[in-house]
Each structure stands twice: as structure tokens, then as C-alpha cells.
Image (tube, rainbow, N blue to C red):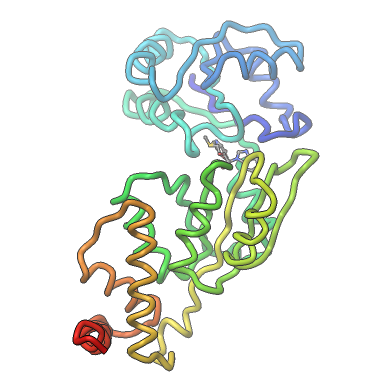
Length: 290
Ligand code: SAM
């Protein structure tokens, strides 16, 4: 049997009774980082063989673990923190086990994204989990296209060294929407900063981001999205277009004019062709040497 075991995201007191029982009684523990998990096991006085299973060995190690499961061994799968399978390589082993018709059981526990969502104070009835936006330009663009009009609360993970860049990237698409920056959850330096992207950028330009972060972003306002009420001028359109084009450039994204028009249209909730015409109105004047 494969036991998917959630472990704490920072506070060791969050380990469950069942998690400890499974870790004590399984045959082997598959861990993302064996040294990291060893510390957890030592804290709870558990001695067990560990096998590493992480991003760069998962294709080789996966079949070895599946064979063990087929032979009747009990494997506990843990990640560095939180729930295996959520933004970590655990998902592949779980898929391989289910594909092979093997039994999988879950010992639920902490997830950073859900902890942040609940603490954010933003709507929890409908939400989207996006994990890490990453640095791939195409994926970033897909994310940008999505977030402009996404009405559900959006959860993303981010590394401290990329936090400000990501906030600057978001600034182009979410305007004044609320964002909760959740830092070091369940740890002694836990901090939830609630504000707008602009206020967070100001804060983190004076306070270097340290620790682990989850961002929880308010969804776009359905009412505003459905109404064509924004009193937008051609200059607003032209300026927003240039703002996004500049941000794309800074992030190394190269896009066609029409893709940016699409974002501007979603941002102001106006039809694309209308936005295109308004953009061209100012663009041609500008190019005409005004
Ligand atoms: N499997 C984990 C889970 O259940 O949430 C997530 C693993 S992912 C590789 C690691 C990311 O989760 C971190 O970069 C950070 O964005 C987020 N994270 C994990 N622990 C956190 C914590 N204590 N506070 C804030 N964010 C955390």
C-alpha cells in the first residue's frame, strides 16, 4: 500500500497521530529530501529506511518504488513540507500507483496554499490553485490571460528571491484587487500582509523578502466584468498597452500586438476590436509626430 503522508509546513506540532503511526509502521519512507525527513523522524524518535524520490530522479526511482508496492511493501510518501502531490513530485508516484491499480491511502494534513487561503480573509467558496507561476514566458502569459478575468480567489506559491518580480508582474493585470502575502505560515515569524500589489511592492522594496511565501489574490469583480461601465479613454488604453508591453519586455516576454490588446480589453472589460481601434487612434497620432 502507498500511504501519502502530509507533514508539517513549519510547526512540528502539526503532525497527526495517524501520520506518526504510518511512518513508524511502514516498510520504507520515500522522501523528497532524505536529510530533511531524517530530522523530522529523529524528532519523533522514528527509525526507518529512507529512499529519495525527487524531481530529478523520479523517472528512475518511480518504477523501483512501484515494484516494491507490487511485492506487497508498505511505502509512506512524504515531501519536504505539507501534502505530497501539491507542487512537488509526489503527484507522479501517486499517478503511477493508481495507473498500476495499486491501493493508495492518504493521511491528510497541512497544505500551505489552503492555510494561506483561510487566513487571507478573501472568499474561500471558490478558488483556483496555480502553484508556482515559474519563469517560462509562455506559461506566464497564460497565467496573465487567466488572472485578468478570473473571478475566483487565486492561490500561488513563490520563492523569496522572485517575490517582488512576481508582484510587479501581477501589477499589470490585477490593478487594485486585494492580495494577501502570507509568509512563514505556522512558524514563529508567521506574517499575513493584506493590501494591494502596490502596497506590497512598497513594503518589500524596504524589507527584503525572507522565508516561504504564498500569495492569495482576490478574484476579478464579476459585476465590473459583466458591465461595460469603465469610462475608458483612448489614452487610458494606449497607456495600459504600453505598460503591459514594458512589463513584458522586462520579463523577457515577446508577444504579438493582438495578445497585448486582448489583455488590455480584459483589464478594462471592453470588446477587443473597440480596444484595438482606441489604441490605434492614439498610436497613429503619436506616430504622426504629435
Ligand atoms: N507540498 C507543499 C504544500 O502542501 O503546500 C508545497 C511544496 S512547494 C515545493 C513549496 C512552496 O510551498 C514554498 O515555496 C512556498 O511557496 C509554499 N510553502 C511551504 N511552506 C510554507 C510556509 N510555512 N509558509 C508559506 N509558504 C509555504
